[in-house]
Amino acid sequence: MEPESAVTTCYRHPKVESHVRCTRCDRYICPDCMREAAVGHQCVECVKEGARSVRQARTAFGGRISTVPVVTYLLIGLNVLAYVAEVARPSVVDRFEMLGRGLAGPDGGHYLWQYPYPSVLHPEGIIDGEWYRMLTGAFLHQPPTEGTFGIAHIVMNMVALWNIGRVVEAQLGRARYITLYLLSALGGSVLILLAAPDDPTVGASGAIFGLGAAYYVMARRLGADMRGVNQYMGGLLLWLVISAWITSWEGHLGGLLAGGAVTLAYAYAPRDSRRALRQGAACAMLLALLVVLAVAKMSALKSGAA
Image 1 (spheres, rainbow, N blue to C red):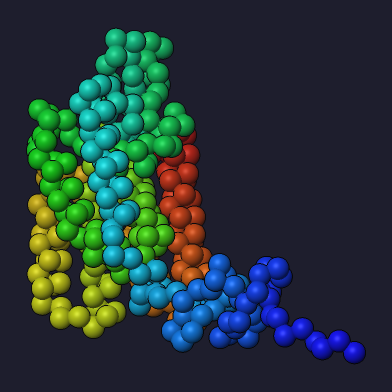
Image 2 (tube, rainbow, N blue to C red):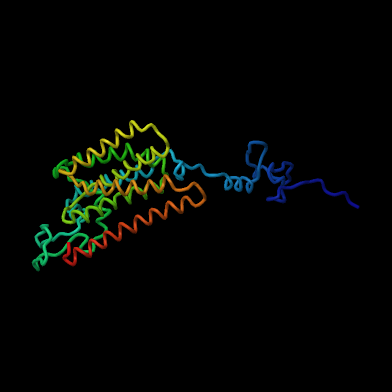
């Protein structure tokens, strides 16, 4: 009998002689298949399997840990781009601001709602099916030379978004954070529709008030020192009261309530394998409630009952 060959080859490249074994699966591997490990070398497949089995680090609220506030950067960028667009073309504000009901004339003028309305006028706003206004209005701000604040409106909102958005995003993770922001913006628009459907409104303040509520709820859940947090919330609530005379308090309050509700669901969902599902279901329920309220109000407006 011929002696058995003592030559060993790589399991992935049978023609390549190899004398090194993978420390995980014990198969022979060639230099092209070797990957550095804590001890020795591993094969390509074992490295991939190990990467899949490593548990992804999560925050206390279930979000993936991220050191770069990408969503906050994106939101600020969208607000600034929208502002540039409205400065370049002022009609953008009339077309996309939050407005429950209004009338537009052939001369480009905008008028308060009345019913019945003259045949030369036509409806505009959500009453005319422009539901997108409930979110687009949250990315617009007062033009530079108009309104109470002018350009200071977007500057103040973006500074607030930068300061608090980074903190909230770091704790919630990107997906939960953007959901919170959009639901807060929508909550502000719904309360505007319910309480002041004739008022044209712009601004990210509703969403930012939602982030403020999130900051408070998260701090309590994490057991943080509440002195600084309470001072911040006191200033936010004081501004809510003051703003009742010069801005849309409805948008601010609606965003605050929606943001608080979303973050309560994030913070107090049981920490088990179904936590993300429960959090998502709570957000879906809030969205459904806001939609029902908006549709019911719009039906009442169209029928003349409100």
